[in-house]
Image (tube, rainbow, N blue to C red; front, side, top):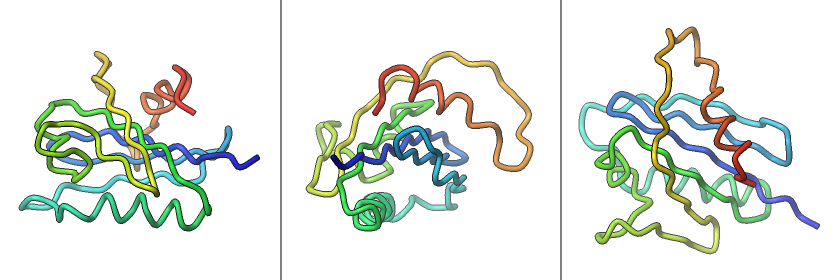
Amino acid sequence: MTIRPTVILKTSPRSTRVLVRVHDDEVLKAVLLTPSGPPHPRALPTLLEALALWHQTPVHAVLCAQEEASWCRLGLLDDLWLAIDTVHYTVELRRRDHERHQRIAGLGSFDDLRQLAFRGVR
């Protein structure tokens, strides 16, 4: 049985944080700073496709945004704000939970993304 990687994405106007989990292991953490202009619409879909090819199985992407406008700029939604699923990945949209603000050191703690995983994301 193949385990599907889970890619948890949390976007804000300043950055997009990425946490990739395979089974219970965290295999990748990244903070992608938002460019001065809109990001290329294929950038994030291409990253998800690359992860699917690397792991040789489709990935499950969970997208959480501090503002709904951030969802559109990532290239994972169509014109009707519906998630675009492909042979390489499926996308699940999650509304942002209210959270405590914390000071970022390095890449930050990613505890909020881990909480998404604990609430049934697999």
